[in-house]
Amino acid sequence: MLNHLSSQPKLKLVNLGMLVALSFGVWSCGKETQLKREIQAVPLQVSVERFDEIFMNSTAETLPELKQTYPFLFPKQTPDSVFLSRTKDPVQQLIQRAVDSVFGDFNATEDDLISLYKHLKYYNPALKKPRLITVYSDVDYRNKVIVTDSIVLISIDNYLGTNHEFYESFYAYIKKTLKKDQIVMDLADTYAARWLNQPRRNTFLEELIYQGKKLYLKDLWVPSAEDYIKIGYTQEEWQWAIDNEFYIWQYFIENELLYSTNPKLVSRFIAPAPFSRFNLELDGESPGSLGQYIGWKIVRSYVENNNIPLLKLLQMDAQTLFNNAKFKPKR
Image 1 (tube, rainbow, N blue to C red):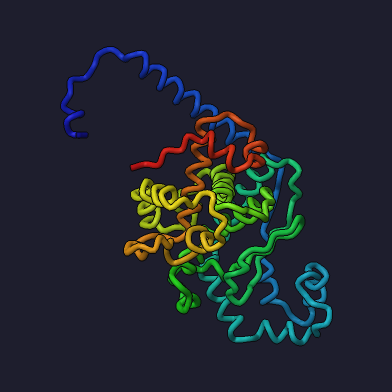
Image 2: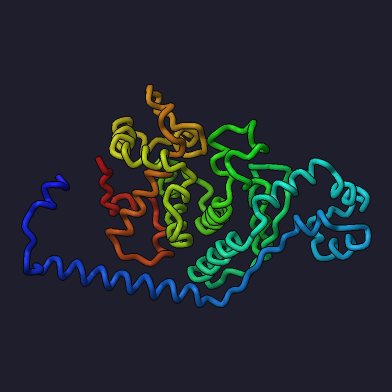
């Protein structure tokens, strides 16, 4: 059909609809540019403290000062000899070399983190400036980031790249998120959960909307990132979700899942997993967490069709949001 369109004669006059669309596009672009300027001007200066490097280069002479600077990283009951021996441990030195090879130039990662915190501060002026500190966790991928009001710990040895040798024994669905671009995403996800503060989701719909709100916050906080990176998919998995969006939604509706309180739906469609569990032959082709994808689409649809302050959107109950989202999955 695209070929047919190109063969049509060109119109000499621009119709009113095209003028309106063009005007709207210019206005929208101008609004986005203004927003970028306002966020860039946010007076928040953060930097990353590379504790991992400092610690591995510490000596008996420098360790006491390091302990004073980072008392929360040194258990009082542990003697200095244990810390110093750790700096000479072959496994720790291997981790250090691996981190240095991937993060030898930390500037781009630090710029991404600064941008994230400027966005966080813009949307939440009450945000306190935290200390961002990189550490080793012996590749504990279950605790990649730890966020408090004043301190943020980033386990940098969990972001060395999907195919890194340290991760050979991990499942593919875990390995795919162990890369540089997920540092900001993991932090954004953690902050989003703190903002929403909704520990109890009784129905599947509530879970969908909760996950959708978290991902929508990533739209605001990391606007330049690709969607597949925000949700932690590969490009192929993202395309699969797009191509099958209508059928995913149809399955949820036909099986009356929206108001189900079955907790197993979380593991089937929300939690990180090798694939989503429709109990069909195609399961192995699907990415995990497709419920997050659908919830995100619903929340985005609501935002596109309604004008509402962000705080009210985040506080809105799932049913009201869903009723007014006008969500229509793509065929």
